[in-house]
Image (cartoon, rainbow, N blue to C red; front, side, top):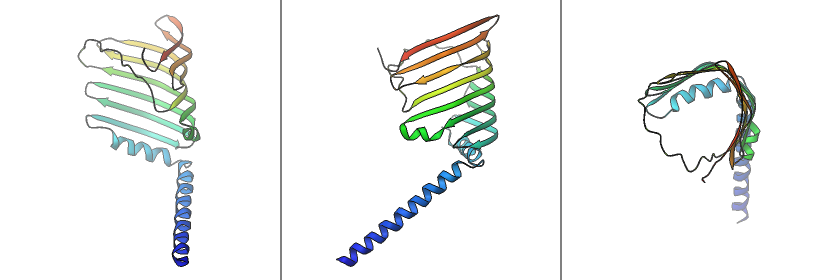
Length: 191
């Protein structure tokens, strides 16, 4: 009996050491400048059927953030193209079910929507997310083309999801010849 317990203890010890080594190696790799480009390449292959994702000029680490020179997502007649995306975050906040960015910025975002107009759908009853979010963002230029066209310059604000509400603080946008300030809050669940 004692021999069996010693054998089980040794196996448990070696398994624990192997798991600790794997976790340490993954933590080390997440801080290297090869981590973000590798994940970006993997994401291009993991998009659902009927969608495409192209990402170029990626640098940075998973732990600290990085730079994406160009990104394009397409689904049918809808596409979104982002130029010069930069972000920094605190990845360790994921352990607390929270994703906190220090900064997210893009030089430009272009949305091309060539889909046929459809009647408005009923608003969803639940807009909950699995994580709390804190995202200060800034976009130099946002354009929309398709059935309607729109151009917004100097767009930004602080977006927060606190598990109960979606909140926009200190939002601002320059549209045509006007500058607008935006603040708002939307409950995640109806009513």
